[in-house]
Length: 127
Image (cartoon, rainbow, N blue to C red):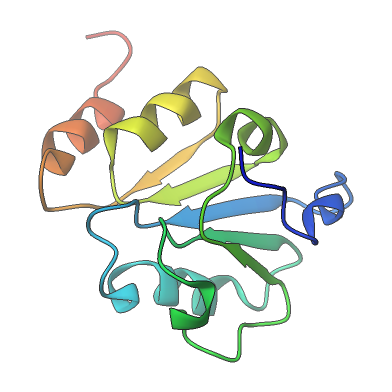
């Protein structure tokens, strides 16, 4: 297991946490999801936690907004219980873990199996 990032102690419940990732496959163009999410949330009173899915953090658009923290990978078993919302590309693993932890999802993805996974997120519980 990788060590936790130096900023991890900021996830102390004093501010809502929104996690944003494009996963580990469809993460080449941050303008698809991560950059717009960071820009859109920059003025909110919360902490945005970005995972690059293995790409170096230095590849993110810089400078990062003041309320953004980033890492290549994050341990979902530890992060998601501290997360108030999760914006992602509809990857099966991330969606599965978010549902397991009851984290509200914003899902956007068009490649691989992401359309199918996104459809399951939107499926009404009564169906």
